[in-house]
Length: 309
Ligand SMILES: NC(=O)C1=CN([C@@H]2O[C@H](COP(=O)(O)OP(=O)(O)OC[C@H]3O[C@@H](n4cnc5c(N)ncnc54)[C@H](OP(=O)(O)O)[C@@H]3O)[C@@H](O)[C@H]2O)C=CC1
Ligand SMILES: CC(=O)N[C@@H](CCC(=O)OP(=O)(O)O)C(=O)O
Image (tube, rainbow, N blue to C red; front, side, top):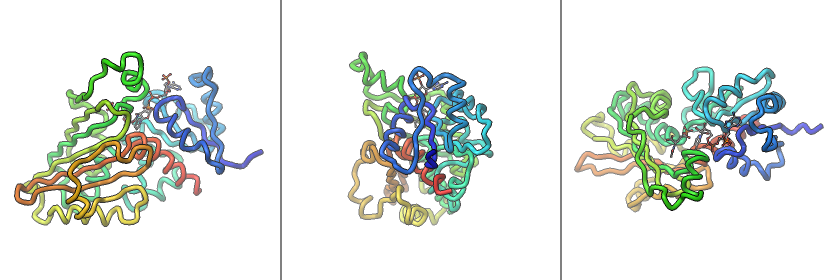
């Protein structure tokens, strides 16, 4: 009998699950369990697979993820949930290792880890250190804009852009106009905001990658919140982080545009602070792959932390 840890991917045929599978394919330090196509939605087979695993990776819609958790009877099974079902639940560890001191350790020892959402990853990465340093007030009236690749919408949206009707797919779509998107509560909680941020998501006719931007007005910030101070605070927070980089002053100066696909197929995220002191305008930016640091890459990063225990 092998003693290598057994990892079950529930939802391995979906957008996130396929990419996790791909990332784990060549690994010699673990075994990956998936169900045959005909059984992948069979509740009994899923329950058996989950309960036989050391770590179950849930790459499912929220309802199916909740169902999967309810199936667990083996107290030793650990879970990484990629869905948004548990991201604000106090019983789950939020799977963003760079977010705060001690977070990586909390993930490493956790039984239940909720992977962050794609858009929240960028928003929280930018805001949390600045709010904590008192440079962005917790009640700042925030507007968060983001443009994602269409794969953020999962298989159904990928089909629209890559299937038979692809020629009719819109080149660019702004959505969530009811301002009820599922992500603001997750952003608010983990960024330490006292108000719900306003979030305007869009997607374009490219497969994957995100540019997320947050505009700030200096007159609404504390006097010490200069562009340089904001940048230095983020640099200090992410100093030594493998996957998160903050553009320095020279890099920011020479950057005139942001390409959402820049970090595709990696777990990297770049953060930038741009602005014009004379106008009192500051722009916080995050660039990353919605299927990398925004989903599958982050899940594998968390898996690796959990495998250390
Ligand atoms: N795409 C992204 O950028 C990101 C996605 N996520 C999250 O990851 C999760 C998965 O998303 P994504 O991969 O995009 O979605 P997909 O729709 O691409 O994949 C979901 C998969 O789950 C399967 N599935 C649905 N219901 C069940 C069930 N009851 N039992 C077993 N399998 C089931 C689906 O099968 P079928 O298609 O046959 O129904 C599909 O293969 C979501 O909760 C999403 O919020 C997180 C971060 C980013
Ligand atoms: C482009 C696009 O359609 N995006 C999806 C992202 C949803 C998603 O999967 O969100 P998580 O990252 O939290 O799981 C949307 O906005 O509904």
